[in-house]
Image (tube, rainbow, N blue to C red; front, side):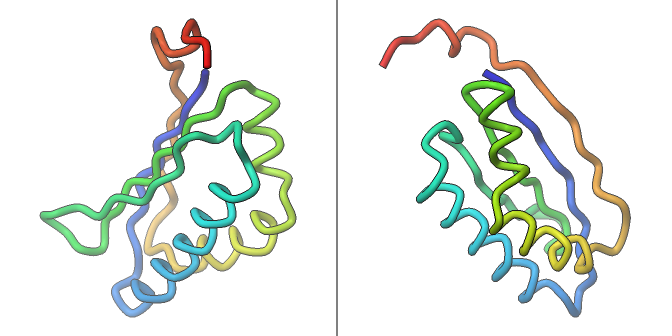
Length: 102
């Protein structure tokens, strides 16, 4: 399994729009991508304009599918337009989870 963690700093005046767009993306991801078991947005307690977006994928193919969905293509540009600075994106391997059987 693979994952990404994105640190997102949002323009204060865009916070509501950003949360609305990310919530729509989360709901669509959960509804249409069974191989994306986690897609969550977390807001910092210290800075209400800073968020982490955390997603896990069962495979590289699942990540590629996520990045190519029509709803991702529609929502991602508007999400990026809400940012006050470049997204800090890191990719990770999930240890131990890939060996679990459903």
